[in-house]
Amino acid sequence: MKKRIPSKTANYADLINENGYYVDKTPFIEVLERISDKYVFFLRPRRFGKSLFLSVLEHYYGIQYTDKFDSLFGNYFIGQPGNTTPLKNKYLILRFDFSGIDTQTEKDIMRLFNEKLFIGFREFNYNYKLLTNEQISEITKKVIQVRYWDHFYQHLVLRALIQGFIY
Image (cartoon, rainbow, N blue to C red; front, side):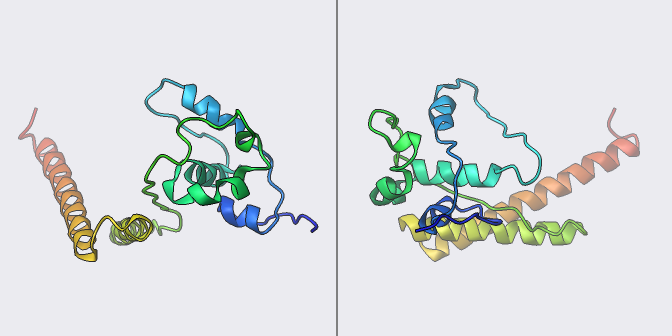
């Protein structure tokens, strides 16, 4: 079957399953595991494959992809004998996608941010069946409350600073 050139896909499994070209970045998984820094930043321009690489990491580390490992990674560096790491398919992945959030108004930002949080929790629950829908709703409400009070507190402190109540 002839390989196709992918267009605007950020899902690794879809790319592989649809026989798309993939430039093998899987050797970097081993490199990432050796980094002792607490945080790693992927600073690259738009359309440089950041989201696709995060999807590669999701499929490599996610427990829910254990049975698909060979079909997803068998033709690439990390899938070859001796190249896998002890952490492959060992984690529960909580994934958030904040793309597409309209930044025109603060109200829209907060509404869409909270929707994206709920979608992430819902997908997590679908993958692992650890939470009931009621628990997901409760978590989402608490996150919204924390964000509201954090926002309120910041404005309160800012107002107090401007009015000279805090030095």
